[in-house]
Amino acid sequence: MYYKSDESNICSMLRGLPDAIAVMGGNAQNSSIRGTVKFYQVARGVLIVADIFGLPVSGQACKNSIFAFHIHGGSDCSGNGDDPFANAGSHYNPGSCPHPYHAGDMPPLFGAGHRAFLAFLTDRVTVSEIIGKTVIIHDRVDDFTTQPAGNAGNKIACGVISAVKR
Image (tube, rainbow, N blue to C red; front, side, top):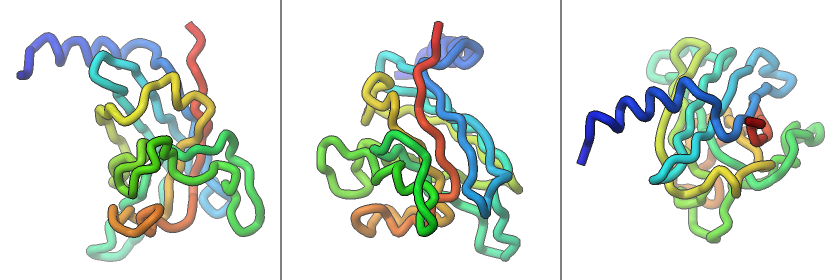
């Protein structure tokens, strides 16, 4: 059941400090990607708010810019020549669930020009368990079927989730 006070509580919360944040940065080919992913612990789960800019634009009709978006289990955004974010690890999946039921599976980012904004509630994680994990943006849409990672393509941006000091 929806209560009017729910809306005012969410708006009030979003004006305050999040419990954790990931500052996103793009790989060498997508160095213009920047933004934040904020995490707010609430009674029913975690409110996740992503504000990303500098995303690539497809420029093709019916090929809108949709990007897979996940929490990964690694603890840093370094990598190698083949995968600049290899150390971000694979999808965060402490329950060993099949894709798309990993704890780290999130809705896709829908690009609007070079920007994307997404806010959603999940009960798959708590803020305390994801501190130190990574957030990844992939260059393709997640098909929500292919194992283990939804055929999401290359990692184009990464950020490490850090607790916010109060």
